[in-house]
Image (tube, helix red, strand yellow):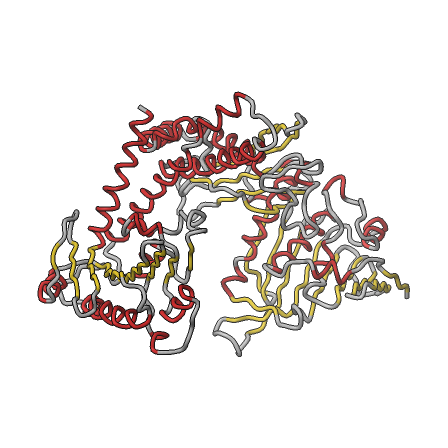
Length: 626
């Protein structure tokens, strides 16, 4: 018997291997190793057992066995196996030599039989080799048994197990494409078995013929890097279950999905980007890259932004050539976006939509926001630089040209929120939480210092623009907690049961004011909705308790926001509410006993008013450009 030691910290390496989709990761590594060994037939056996302690279809994966007809552990392969980080296979396959440690994430011992030898790799780094007579001369077997992650069984279900071959096909697609293109082998067959019953196969026949396009990307230091875009598009027919794959590859393995969408409904496609640049920048687990989103450096001269900008343009060009109507339809969407948002027109010609394929007006507008974020970031940098040096004439002109963009963006964003709220109302939704979160997310507490930071999520202006001048705004908080926020006192009491939807506090030299808002269902019903009627009583209860809790705050207003139907309108008339001037239904009542103002607003009315106010700003922006 011969014994060797691997002189590395295996425990650290294993701990860094992710546990998500670990079975797919283990099978990928095993199959990749078999392919590297020139195997043409690979059999994957997964042994499972029903887990009666969990849900009905729960399975425990007990053992994984891989058999292949490759070269096996010949002299060169055995020498490579004994060393960590070997460059053997790197030139052809880009392998890192770390895959075998993935197996030790789920078992204490990795066992091989090959060419008359057995080889064991254990978690403590020992490799034990024995001569055996049972090992086949023309096959290699890998066995992983007693599978667990940190002592816990590896669980799956029948549906997830049966989907593994498709996941592996996607992960291995660059490797399979390479094999087919370079004619390494035309007979490769990968079979999958559950408890010795075959359930799926991957063969080269199912791999589409791929085209290739070279993309050259220039870094800020004017150095060019070459990328190879491998692609396939089935333009001949629409499919109910299309095969759609897009991703970044390294060392002929699919590492991560594209960071943007490809809008091609019911069309099968493959878009895979490969490059030496990507090969050199994977992490040790080969599940991600070390490339930054925006930042560049000496070791990373290209960012994801640089890569994706060029990649999206090239994919869009390929799709425009493949689908005759795409360019025309996208131009129509682009022109519609220009018409709706003319105050962004200086930037639309530079804009890159956030997805590719068939693009909608919304896709272009979303893309404009990404561009605007970059412009604003550059403006902030220029403003900081102006503190230390004089700006050039061009830099000063840039600040003047773009200084109104943030205001324009805010006004456009308000319109988007109004449209989204209108969709909720049109759907006749009873989901109060949706409306609540759109006005102000549940559980939030904001102060006037951070209200600007939260302009996209804090939309109290929907009710009234003056509410955006709050000192404190609290969403879905108990009254006693509200008291702690406002006057820094806290005690347990009945108020802990009182929880208004929105509570707004105004603190100025002239006066202190409180606004309490309750939101009720928005569906218009033929029968009486007790939730709405109860909302009126709830406001009175809040007023009575809040008058006691905040006796020094004299000015208080209470709002009920709902859908005012004929049944609620009748109740409002009975209770003495008066109709106010508005673009719809809005009612007011002053309670003398409580010294309190009560308002009941119809949600559609509230939205009509908000739309009318915002339309004024939209018109000003548009006319300014004219």
